[in-house]
Length: 183
Image (cartoon, rainbow, N blue to C red; front, side, top):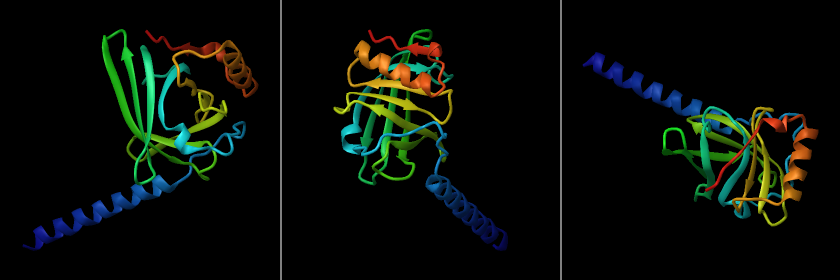
């Protein structure tokens, strides 16, 4: 009986420590690179909804994907649910990834932290956006992550060039961008 009680106490203690660890990581801010200036007066409600990926710096989780979109939904707890979807044209199947985002500081700034893997967060910094919330330029936590997003499957040449120029000014090699196919 004593061994059984010890196992229960140990299990509860470990569960409690795990929960505390999760809460600490969830509350912790993600470092924003010094070259990143996020947008001010960010309107969470306007940002919610479906976005099409126009371009990205490719990385292993998006390799060989086309028709990529991200949908953001604000749940009743104030957490942003993230639903990414893309078609893997090599394996001929849809891939999805679901995560969550929280503000990485003040709620009126475009600095978020996103997690697809438990309590581990990455920076998601909205650095440019058109006033109608129709297109956005997003930098990750370093020069390996960049996305151009739009409410439509294409963007104007003027906006594209404006975003590319800004990214280059901030040290991004825009020649490394993958331009997402939408068909």
